[in-house]
Image 1 (cartoon, rainbow, N blue to C red):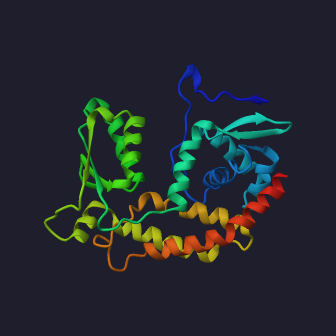
Image 2 (cartoon, rainbow, N blue to C red):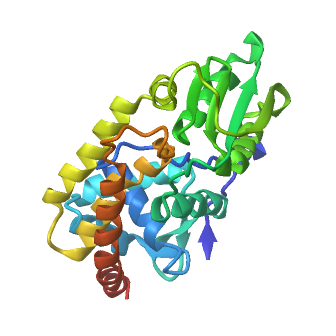
Image 3 (cartoon, rainbow, N blue to C red):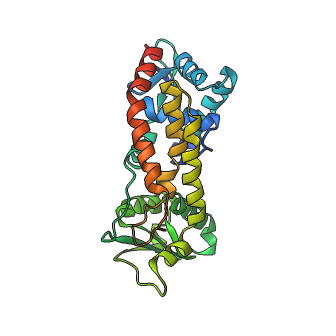
Length: 279
């Protein structure tokens, strides 16, 4: 077997993509979703011809698919590897990210009013402003809310992810985490939630997801991949607020119900199609 080196030039650590790294529905995002769903099921390797064939089932032309695959290689998700045929293996460094995504995508967790929170306080010097930017970006992508510029709040069960983020961006020395009970606010908890999170944007994301279900393809494989692709952002950016903080007409429960129903129906026939294509 001949494999490309996973390391960056000069012996640097391999570049592994973030959990959210491409616009849902784009070629890069759809191919990334296929890789995340199926390469581990297939033993970690797929031939180039099979990957292009699966892309065609998603309506992606061959040239566009090959460009998308090249981007996944550049991002560090795939490694070129020959196993009797030209193909691609999953970068081992990307497996923890995919496993983290599995937990989010297929088991979206909503808080109860008794659940604890995690407060993230940090003071990062101007000389490390790029670290500060990366930290804020990553906290936003796990659904943390902004209490103030240097104080963020997220569900307590995400504390481990916050610690991992702090280590990955190099901000651990400037941050302190505080496990916390239900916040005591001047107004109602719903008012606090609206100030700390962009609930209007989250609502729009849920409604857009629900509307997209009407246009899913009829064949199980493209329907399942597109379902996962359009859904996978929501379990990250929606913190799963407890009842006391959610608006009364919050659409999140319906999104979870629809995703759970459709994914249960489509998962097995979609996998059967992938196995038929890959032999």
